Length: 188
Image 1 (spheres, helix red, strand yellow):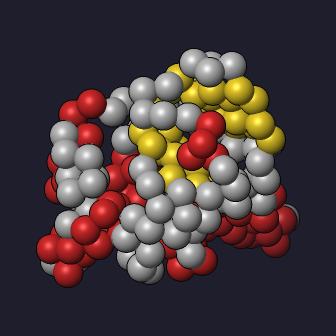
Image 2 (image 1 turned 180 degrees about the horizontal axis):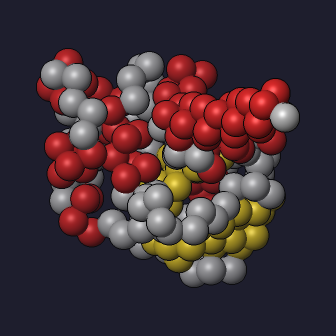
């Protein structure tokens, strides 16, 4: 997502449905990207889901939503989530291990997890609308509406600001603003 674009908790786009037990290494991105410590989205995006859904990066567009079953993204790596964020994609999972969830949030990916049966509500190509702040899930193709647990309030600023780096930049700017005000008061 470009920093000049307005952030929205709602995404509307095509569904890309994946199954259960999609590992990060080999499922989300090839292991060589992880072991090579690639972090630049331009290097990662062409390989996103290449072993799970070849050609994915050429078909997807901003606002599309990945829907997965249980145990998505096993492994504590963030490489693939960097590409998801760069492409402005959302992620809705039945379950996701804590370390994978932490990695996705750490780079600013909008994620809903704890969504039992979500894979049964859609198929690849369906038109979805997801509100990550409320947990609202709508499949416009099948006229299905559900409410899932929303993204917790405690991590919303982290995601809205683009992950750990964006949150730290914002914190530093706020601290410098406070320091500037304090310095000005001290000078008076």
